Image 1 (cartoon, rainbow, N blue to C red):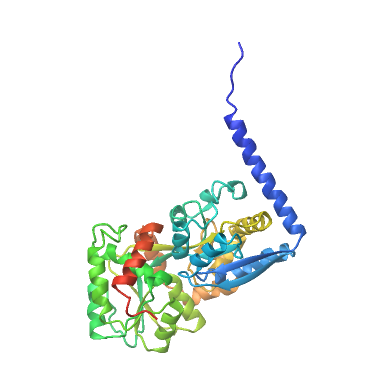
Image 2: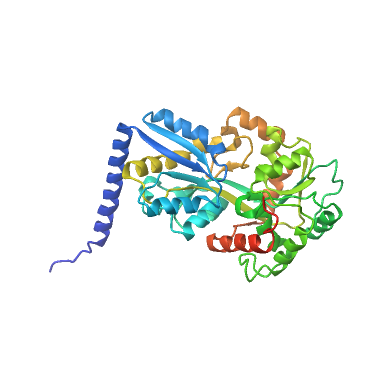
Amino acid sequence: MRTLISKAPLAAALRKFAVAALATAALCTAHAQSVTVNVVDVGGALALLQDAIEGYKAKNPNVKFTFTKAPAPELPGKIKAMQSAGRTDIDLVLGGLDILSAGIEQNLWIRILPDHSAKFPGVLGNYLPQALKMQELARDQALAVVFMPGGPLLEYNPDKVKQPPTTPQELLAWCKANPNKLIYGRPANSGPGRTFMMGLPYLLGDKDPKDPINGWDKTWVYLKALNTCIEYYPGGTGAVMRELGEGSRDMTPSVTGWDINPRALGVVPKNYKIAAFKGFTWVNDTQYMMLPKGLAADKQAVVLDLMAFLLAPAQQALTYDKGYFYPGPAVKNVPVTMAPQQSQDVIKEFGRAEYADWIANRPHAQPLDSQALVKAFRKWDEEVGAQKLR
């Protein structure tokens, strides 16, 4: 009697092998010819990754790169228009949850996992535990490349703020007593701004921190009250830090990287302090790598190869940088001792001793998922900052 054997596993294995073989062939073809990869940086991740990308270029001299920056609210429409016209001039997008979420909502991104899992063996197991939680938000359409615990924290000028607030209520009282001296960026394109917004439901005891429409009653009341003593909301965190450093503002919600890096660069004085809210929950942050749909096979093969290169430990060690996204690495077993000496020196001089304790002992939460985040941005724009955006 003949035994019947299912052909499904064999067929699946053959399909996987064929996909990998095609990708390898496309990569070999691309490397034999000159290929230009157009990279768009939305969230500032290029500051952490450019040295590593230059390292890839050195190993692959036929691959050239162009780098541009774009604000998160504008890029999805641009990509959508390109795809509708049957062309894509953007090959790799680096950005945070804002651009990731908008792109998922508009179906802009190539599905990376499991479609291209052969290029990234064991990638999910290599992530740090909290970075893996952030990877879940990508819905397989991006890969996390750098990680930081985020905030919300309060950064302040100690010459002007003698007793920093330790609760949202104390912050509101201070803001009303010092009008126009508190500032934060529009959440839709400011990491510290959205981290502050997403951290408030935990601090205020809202009924559902993951539901900005039906679960944030206390948060929206609070943000509207805080709005009465804030002059305006910049369209980016860089402008916030310039005003803080120049002395026109005395305090801002912050995160680990935006605390360390501007002080290391001299934008904010070194002696500025950081404070934590009592009982706060970290709202973690990540920058992702995303591929727009419509890439030619040679471009796609090179970009996937680059992404795998950027997730290797040697390249991840470069993401300590000057503390911009502290600590930086998204994968395991990349201690600061692997980083360039300059990075080690910056972290030693401008890092905070209290960070290690807070990171280890305070709870961590994922940010809102893509759909909820878009809703939160829209509600904040319409009901909180609509008349005060610049």
